[in-house]
Length: 149
Length: 450
Image (cartoon, rainbow over all chains, first blue to last red; front, side, top):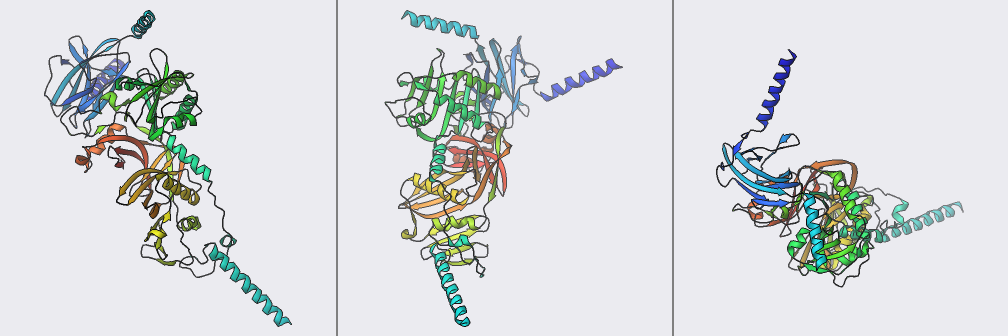
């Protein structure tokens, strides 16, 4: 009996989690959808590097749409979870949005999906988080370079 | 003999009372209250009351207003926090900022830097102060006892105290006169540690508009762009609680009569249908409204209140009068708009405290019209503003920005950019609410409750 109840609770939790993130659970890398639904302003390049452990992803999307964050896992993009919940934001009248996203060391390949009423656009970008040890190494090299001068 | 004695006493009393009444008129005190014909006798009416205003206090307050930042930002690693002047955390953050400023010592010369280098200083570990108007850097540093001897006299609206990758402390600023950005090495103690402590306590993650590229046109859509140093802070904002009570007509208004040279006893007086009391002199009128507001109007230049052409003189007058009228208030009056039309200039003021500003829904707190150096019209909504121990909350910047898009004047505003977005209190129909004040690039402003 206990096992049955536990199973039911587990199923319910799964259903609630899935229904709160209405966008697909997986997006293939070639799927871009419609055009003109989302513009990413930060990062402003498809590929960027940083020493910061987080980045604020921002831009403009169609008013009334929802912007979802995905991360590349294997050969498909999966919803990006931060503090236990999938990252998404509702877009208001101005279309402006900003989402702080934590980065993992190395390559972080993201996909943003703006979706409203069955229409969507996906856009991808990559942020490379350099380790602070590399940062201090560059620093040391810099000081050595100045020393040689 | 007895009859003579009584006559003498009565005559003496009459002579004394005539002297008292003359003294009363001399000192412009009220003998009879408006619409009430009985004689109100009080010692207070005979002897001129000493002014409670301390001129040096007002000067100090105005100086505080000039040098106190609108917001302070702290950046440490990948985190940035913004503390607005209305935040309950502002006094603590300002104290930290002052400690850092007063510990500064010049360690090298001011050198010109590129715009990119200047913007980078906002991204490294640093503290940034944004002032409500342009101020002299020398004056600011001198005020905080920082040891500086500047060859140039830069005028700044923002100041960054930071530490770069090579662990060098520096000051970074843009001289608004020349448009050049500068950097100057400084000596200080424990800037990084103080900033780190502030950041860790906050858990905030904000950005400036330029970091998110909201200061540049990105697509074809019509948008109001932001000035590059407007903070895009996410999540709700907490504001220190504030209360405002209207000051109704009472003896507290004596200072108004004095300031505008209206002799209460000789002025023609009547009360209109809206319960406004009108005091009419030959060339000027004073109206005192039932809800706690007054309006002075001079019909001729000679009856205007002569000040001078400088805005500072108007600011001083407005604050001295307010302190005389409501000395118990936590607020002072800050200039929020100045418009010159022909030979007259209109100055609008708002109530500001050391912990945030208060806008009135329908009008400025004070509106002054100055013509040829004299006040010709002066209108004030008189409130006693007090800071409370409570807190109010308002939306984040993006939600406030969304609200602007639903306003009827949006198409007109889309040609402008947002120079400043600041959380504030708004008094609407007697209710105090937390909202946002937005200043556009043409200096026009709007405030709203999203």
